[in-house]
Length: 466
Image (tube, rainbow, N blue to C red; front, side):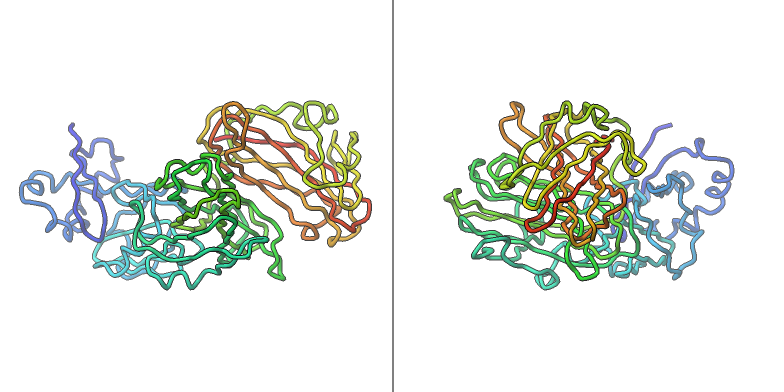
């Protein structure tokens, strides 16, 4: 039988039609043959007589919930006016994946037969069901100028000024965007703190663009998803970083999607974007952001179907295949050695570090395919005598150019010093989509200045791709 797709604009819903019910289970055939008129009578006015006649009995409404893969109840199986929880992942009735969920929600509010609340609930009315994925933070779509008042804008790091923040009605095809105009040396960060209902995987997303056409002078950009301690200080972080002048932002005016995933163990989170115009850029230009949003969902392809090849990933052979170096301005790497077992883990490496010693351990690798999501993880154990003395630890996964001459971007997971519990194995894990398949994995340990000699153990570096 031939398939047909007809569209009717009613509360921004697409309706998919099919001219045969032969593929349906018998129970659904009976349901649709006896109840179609009740389900679709509010829609008939949207279709011409030509299409309605002959197809009135053949319309099939498809509602697919991605989170568990089951067919949702048809519209008249819900009770009008009853409030239902929005599933975490959903397709609309036309089977169309929504790429801008927050704008869909805003567009839908106030439409006939629909009542969407800020808590992520929906009400059904007039036989129509509209479901959508809802971010756990708010005002990240910058639909109106007042949305910016729900964000904290300030200078970043050692900069004297953040540059000028403004909201534009549109830029390069996106509506409601933020613009940060910066002179060389200006650095800005924009932050929002919010609470979530439970620990688990959270994904931060944003779109970013620049108007600087010379790729070598384009800005550095961060997307952070932060987990806060009870005192509101940052305890854990996952971030995606586009290096300045690397080509990671593409051509001027083109939008780049950034996305970083973090497994949160507490319920106070922050999302943050950072823009840095390097001092040596010698140009004034702008960075644009839109749709800075966080979703509660596992990373694409989690937990991964392909393990990226990393030699001696579990340190069975000490640090063979790994390069150990001083990190940054550290006074040394510390003393690295192999230990047959430690607190339930076999074959681990240990770093004994004095205060101000910083070590990084790196290895080149290659993902099977660029543009597919990866989950990176490492286990670590600190023998610090107190939480306040625990080290700072990074896990990096880099995307290089084809000659490994420069870093284009990276995904990172960070444990902040003094913010995590010693005496037990801890895991850093984050989700990041590499831009290239010229990669490297690296972990870093820093014993802060003034801290005593202490040990930190590492085991099992994994990168798994969807």
